Image (cartoon, rainbow, N blue to C red; front, side):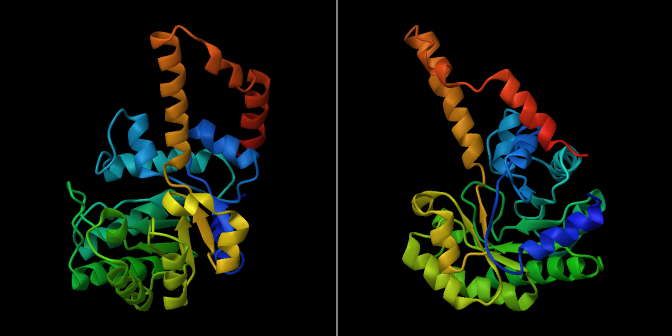
Length: 276
């Protein structure tokens, strides 16, 4: 599929219905997800940092994130969106430049957070947060091709502001031109319903925290347009590494290895999911 067709397909996915966008961390995981039926993929800043042996929170530079995203774009025929943290800079122009660079490498969209990449994840002041989203949205529109610009209100997840403030920000981000709105890890279903009822643009929900117990059908019925997995699948993989290695080295048991997939199955998925 050409990049132009990928960008259009990604745009169309956000216009109606509900879809899951899993987050791979390398070519292999991207191809497996594509083979298993994913319609689009997104990078995960945390999962990418883990592959580099680094912790999350600013563990990856913009150049590294772009190179990583470019690698995933080349891995399959699916559209890819970039998890680009705070846009890799504090100013509105930083966000706009990140949009332009993301478009240049072939991404079909990106998400940008409203918190700084320092310990504590302090939120940007309201006015600056909105200015940053307005600049990013303007840069996206200037591309003259489909590009989904997602604005995140991360303060609820980090405990730095409440749901009322998150909704105030999401409403302002919508007015500023964001295509998709995202408040990661609201306290529960009722709070997610408040978010969905407060805006008219599509909303992304993260399959983490309280929402992890819900099904795709339940989230779709509520009105969620897109469901991302963030670093959850990568964390599940790392949990398997932890548990299997602990069993071998601490307990002398290879029992966890009974649950592996066969090499033939993995090979088949990698071939099926590869870019044509």
